[in-house]
Length: 110
Image (cartoon, rainbow, N blue to C red; front, side):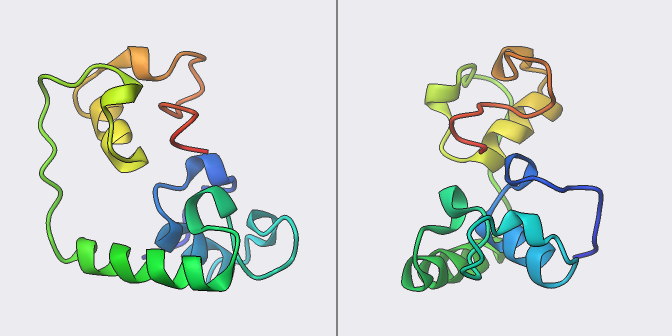
């Protein structure tokens, strides 16, 4: 994974991505309280929760996402930020980005 332009927790699709940007790309602001855990809405508030989420995401990353355009049209139907991003970017479901900032489903993609 390379270092791209992402700088805020709202731009991160997963805890694994947030950890990468914190550790490998020097995005210290992702760890607002300096405890080594970035984007606590994605990674959890303690090390044990973060490690559990990272383990689950690494196992999931071995499987290709099975998202498809079609039935899902609202944030309440999305299971993850990654799925919401897919529907916004690939399916053109603009209603997922109510304020037009490019981040879908703010409650899910913080």
